[in-house]
Length: 316
Ligand SMILES: Cc1cc2nc3c(=O)[nH]c(=O)nc-3n(C[C@H](O)[C@H](O)[C@H](O)COP(=O)(O)O)c2cc1C
Image (cartoon, rainbow, N blue to C red; front, top):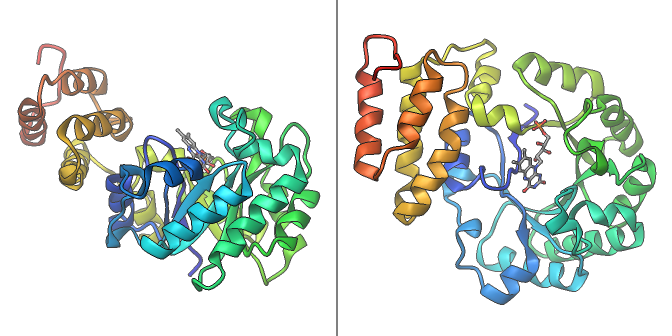
């Protein structure tokens, strides 16, 4: 069965959320982008680099402009952390990344993209894992064919295309026709993972059918409906009630056990508004939960919501 994958999303798809997504049926997970330089200066003992066995198959994503840093950081993580894959970020349009010449800025200079991709491919050699690159169609113009040529020449075996230009951010629709063009271009030897604007299991099916891609990656929709992976496995839409969602939040809280408390509460609070999207009374429930002054009260409030028999109203 072709994989349906949780996308990397900085600040959201940390180890606890990846565990939840795997439990709910995501076939693969992906770390958010991690600076190669940061790894080389600070070492491997960092929350961004921690993962559990349950998150496997997991691909670890690096960003940097310097091929030598990418190679050395790649070697280090492969040797000591043993992720199932190593990925190069060539799609992030955030100025703090592109200013360094990394992320989507690599798409402006294809010889540098080639060297960065070679560094990732070289690090993977000898570890028996396949290198991948996650990229966009181009910086401000679509150069898919030239980008692909550089990546194939570098020995990249898995191509993940978020089918927009870097300059577009998240505006306009992802152009799935370009995912189809990519699959036609690379043939069967190279895996193509399609990404962009998948909202439902109908979209997953459509993206597979329309493009012939080998995997589908889901980002934002998985933050508010991580059970989309279960829906895909079971082939039906699932209704998640308030109680069901509180159960997921409690599960996430458990996964945060290894984190320091402030970090855990912060991590959970960014996900709560998303996980409660669409529930009755959300506009009262979310602020009430998020304003919990400490962990104990937060847990009490979760328990209250789970026991709640009546619909939630403003006076609570
Ligand atoms: C908050 C946020 C953070 C993201 N962080 C990363 C990242 O660290 N690495 C990456 O390759 N893409 C990142 N992305 C892009 C997503 O992986 C994905 O390509 C994009 O959201 C399009 O997919 P979607 O329409 O299913 O959300 C991020 C997206 C969002 C919304």
